[in-house]
Image (cartoon, rainbow, N blue to C red):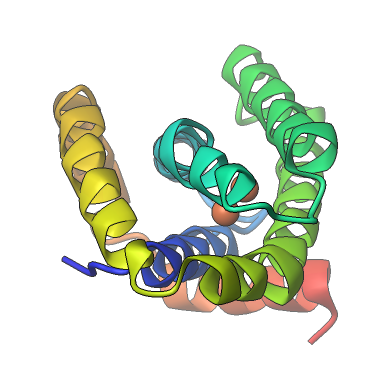
Length: 177
Ligand SMILES: [Fe+2]
Ligand SMILES: [Fe+2]
C-alpha cells in the first residue's frame, strides 16, 4: 500500500479515471451499473479520506488553496451526481449524459488538485505526508470493509465485459482523443 498521502491521492485519481475510461454508451446496462457502482465506491472513499484526514492537515499547515470554499463544495456536486445515478435506470436516456457530467466534474476537480493543492501540500507538509498517508491507509481499510459484498458483485458483473474496447470508445466520445 502506498504510504505518502499525496501519492495515494494521485493513485486514487488514476484509478477512478481508468474506471471512467472503461465506460461506454454501448455497454450492457448491467455492466454500466456495475461500473458506476465501482466509481461510486472509489469516489466515496476518496472524498471521505480527503475531507476527514488530508484536507484538515493541509488547512492546518496553512494552505492558500480555498479548500472549504471550493474543494469541499466540488465534492458535494460529485455526490449529488452520484445520488442522481442511483435513481436512474442504466438503460434510460439520461444515464450516459449524467455519467459524462460526473466524469467532467471529476476530471476538473482532479486536475485542480493535482496542479495546485497536492504540490502545495508537499511543500507545506514534507515528511509529515508519511504519517498522514498511514492514517489514510488505516481509514481506507475500514471504509473498504463496508463495501466488500458490493465489490464482489460488481466483479462478477464486470467479468468478461469488453472493457478495453469500450474504454477507447469513451475516450473518443468524451475526451475527443
Ligand atoms: Fe478532492
Ligand atoms: Fe482527490
